[in-house]
Amino acid sequence: MALSTAQTGESMHSSTFASRYVRTALPRFRIPEQSIPKDAAYQIINDELMLDGNPRLNLASFVTTWMEPECDKLMMAAINKNYVDMDEYPVTTELQNRCVNMIAHLFNAPIGDDETAVGVGTVGSSEAIMLAGLAFKRKWQNRRKAEGKPYDKPNIVTGANVCWEKFARYFEVELKEVKLTEGYYVMNPEKAVEMVDENTICVAAILGSTLTGEFEDVKLLNDLLVAKNAETGWDTPIHVDAASGGFIAPFIYPDLEWDFRLPLVKSINVSGHKYGLVYAGVGWVIWRNKEDLPEELIFHINYLGADQPTFTLNFSKGSNQIIAQYYQLIRLGFEGYKDIMQNCRDNATVLREGIEKTGYFDVVSKDSGVPLVAFSLKDSSRYTVFEVAESLRRFGWIVPAYTMPADAEHVAVMRVVIREDFSRGLAERLIADLTKTMADMDAHAGKKAVAAEPAKKTVREIEKEVTTYWRRLVAGKKSSLVC
Ligand SMILES: Cc1ncc(COP(=O)(O)O)c(C=O)c1O
Image 1 (cartoon, rainbow, N blue to C red):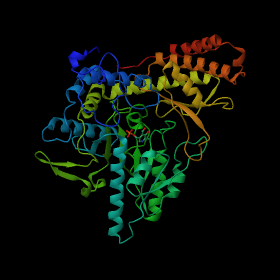
Image 2: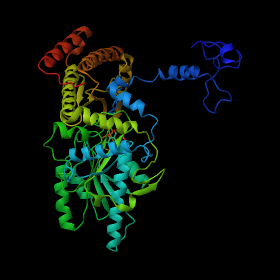
Image 3: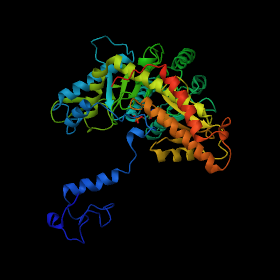
Image 4: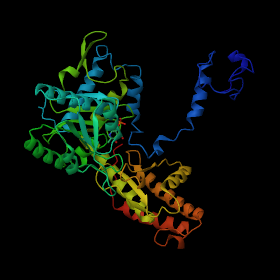
C-alpha cells in the first residue's frame, strides 16, 4: 500500500497512512473522526492478522479449517443472506430441513424414510445444548406441575463439560457433576445414575470427551437408568452431547449403540463445524420425537412474510454454514465421511505411536473415539508440558497444554486433534519437530534426558530412529483420503 498524501487528501502529520507506514496509533477505543481509503483499511487489518496463528497448524481445535474451493464459492455467494429471512430465502430453509432429516436418520431417529425429523440448525453445539437443556427443563416442570409437585429445584447430572456448566448457570438448573479421577477421564455411568433424583431433568452424556476424545458408555448409562426409572417411577431421560463424536461414530463405529437406538436418548447435539466438516458457525440439535420438544418453546414469528416457527436463541445469522453443511452431506455421502474419519483415525494412530516412540510421553487418550492424541510427560520434574508446547510454537505448531478438571487437575497434558487437513506428511513433521524440541528441552534443562537412554544419543540419531520407525509403520497402511 503506497498511497500518496495527494491521493488520500490527508496531511503528512495527521494521517495514519501519510506514507507507506502507520505513523500514529491505530484506533482502539473510539471510532475515528475521519475516513481512510479502503485499501488502507485493508492493509492495516491484514497486517495485524498476519500475527494470528495459521489455522491449519492449530492442532488445538476440532473445528474445520479446510473445505473444497467449490464449497468456498457457494459460501461466498451466500455471505449476504440472513438465515432468518426464511420467506425470502425459502431454498436455504429447505436445505436446513434436509440437513436435519439426514442427521436424524444418521442418528437412527425413529422416523420413516419420508418423514420430517424434529431438529434445528444452530451456531454450534453450545447453542444446541442450551436448547436441548431448555426442552428438558420445561418438560420436567410440566410433568411436576401436573403431578402437583414442587418444580423449583431442577438439576442436571453430567461429567466435565463447560457447556453444561454454562447452561446450568444461565438457566438456573443445579449442576451435579460426576467427578473425574486420574486415569478415568469420562463420566462413570454408575456414579451418574446414583446422583439422579426426582428433580433431575436429564443425564447428559458426552460422545467424545473434549479432554481425551473418549466416548462415554451411553448404552450402559441407558440400561442403568431404565432400571432406576422402573424402580422409582421417575422418567429421567438422556441427552447425548455428540459435539465431536456425532459425525464419527455412525461412520467408523456403526455397531456402537449411543444414539436414538437407546430408548432413553431423547435429544442429541452435534457440531457441524467439527467432524461435520464445515467452517465455524454451525451445529445441530435433533429430538427423538415431536413430544420431546415442548410446543410452548417454539416461537412463531411473522417476520417479513409468512409464519415461521423457530426455536433458536438468536434470530439473525449467516446462511452460508447451512449451505456448506448440505454441500458436505451430499458431496461426501456416507462413503466419503467414512473414508475421511478412517483416515483421521489412521493418522492419529501413526502420531500416537510416534509420540510414544520418543520415550518422553505417556499417551492418555484411547485408541477409539475422536481421533486425537493427548499425552503427558513421563517426568515433569525438569520442564512441563506448558514449556514443551511453548517451545513447539517456534516451528509453527499450536499444540495446547492444559490440566485436567477437578479431582484430576494434577495431570497436565498436551493434545493434538487430528482433522481432515492434518495429513500424514504433517504428522511426520510434527513427530520430527517434537523430537527436536525434546532434545532442546533436555539441553536447556542441562540434564540427561528422561527417556530410555535418549541422553546417550544425538538429536540426529533420535530423529533418524523415529523417522525410520514411522516410515515402516506408514508403508503398511493404505491412504484413504478423499479430498
Ligand atoms: C463435548 C463438547 N460439547 C460442546 C462443545 C461446544 O461446541 P461448539 O464449539 O460447537 O459450541 C465442545 C467443544 O469442543 C465439546 O467438545
